[in-house]
Length: 369
Image 1: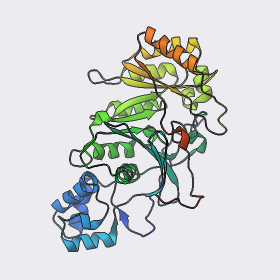
Image 2: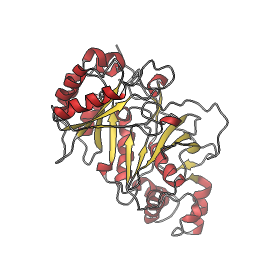
Image 3: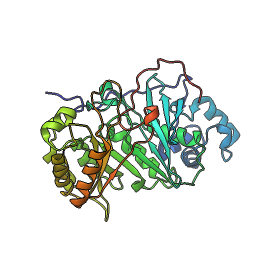
Image 4: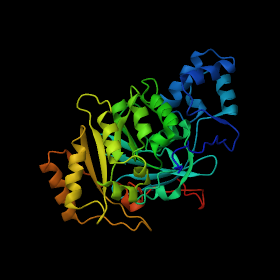
């Protein structure tokens, strides 16, 4: 039987409605080649690279170190945008859910979450998702296509610009926990990661970037071979193969033992831990026996557990446990010596919390940002 994640997700090469070539997504070498193709010295490509990613310039006039004629030609042939920030919905908790329209009309979502001493951006990696997790709204969309490198980076650029994030100030954390299975779009994810961590571009330390997977074992193995690489999180959500296979079809191919083995072999830096994300589903994954099995699984490799009460969405059929059950599970893990925290997802009132992001084609009139 062929599973939807066995093959690469459908690719698209979206063209800007204006016909201009989007520059986000191009690496330093590509921008140097672009400059030389326009009869400019290669170092002009370095200046483009820095202005695009390190300074996050939003118009060509801001590239004051480029010759005027070069800027004018770039403005006629190239675009500084890879997507359009279509809607912004603020939450009472301070987070903001953003909807982005891609050039082919598809919509994706990302979330900006300020924490005072840092900012966290939740990013999407695909339009839809092939994993089919039954508790996740995105999983019910199916897979439409991978995001390009430029569309991944474009979310970061657009959110930092929109929230007037000062260049070079306030640490930024990135979590690939939005729409899609990041390791199903591995090549574009890694290419974006290299630009995000480049000191000459976004300069985000690798340890501030986390990739969450539903358990795509070949992708975990590929990530293990990368250096540097982002931190890894596993979305576990059940403690028996029977239960996990019912809610997460990927488990029918790579069960709990296969996951434990690949994570035990994953190379970790000193004091680094793999995060186990565990969505608490009432009557499905919240029994005392689940706590015992979760603790045993977590002790097989350096890890920490995030208990995440389920975020309801229409038609899911699931509910979160009551607070007493959540507290009991947390205390059970503490007694077992497992580092644990309860993660209260931001943006629930705007459907921006974990498992609530879902978009397709544009259907509504755009809301001004």
